[in-house]
Length: 202
Length: 185
Image 1 (tube, rainbow over the protein chains, first blue to last red):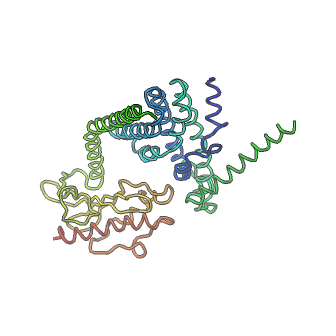
Image 2 (image 1 turned 135 degrees about the horizontal axis):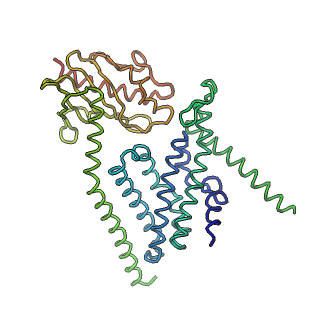
Image 3 (image 1 turned 180 degrees about the vertical axis):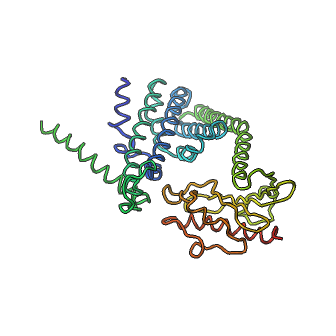
């Protein structure tokens, strides 16, 4: 397996949000501002890489029949332990990332990567996969948050860009999340479908 | 599945989960003290911004005492030269999407608010999170404790975050009540 393929798949070919439609709950909830998207993205990259490594190390120990409950237990314990360690030893980081960590326990991307990749591949590949899928997830979050923060508050990362009169409050409320995601998915499938048609016509 | 392997698998899963539980317990026992300590210093630094250069003493803690409203978490006194100058109420109310924890400093002699700080919240970014900003919180300054605060009369709510604004106002009213009943001269 080539490392470059792992990154291609993780970042755009099988992007967790735009192509696989995984992890929709945190996606819709935290993309109200760019800083939130970055915080969630960083947390997911770190946790996903660690959980992939851990699952890959333990892949021969865990009996296949009970692998799902074992994975869930390992991921939940890992996230809880990391949250407590950050809270105790890096309080400044906890203030900015603390609210995202508990959300990750229920993020199905982590379980999906554990089940479909980490449990079948070498540790080093699993680590790269965690990094790649995490990057793809972060990228998608940042794209959605970019539009929501810009049109909802007229600012990006707190810096005002658009005049206040153009603010659409709906964009930073839950309906704005669905609208933005829907339009982005439409645009993306428009281009992927076009590519497919071109390939078929040749 | 054979009976033997069924038992072996269950035992292994039991072992894995037991191991996870023990490791979470182990980390928690190390970190919980440090976390409590860092939260206490954090709270102290908030005290410091309300009543600078004073001695603080916690006189009510909802984990031990139960004789105040459930919204009041702790009450601390601030004193200078052995004399109490003010009271610090740490309260929580339910906002729009999270618990809003606010710290209210009341001056003892003239029964007025010195300052209100929202110490912890995870409300809607861009709306409810504005409740931590001076633009909203400065309105509470110098309000007298026998006045009932209302978001429509004497406090302007944040646009799009009425529920969060009301949560902070409720917190302040709750501490006013308690102050008037117990510590007012």
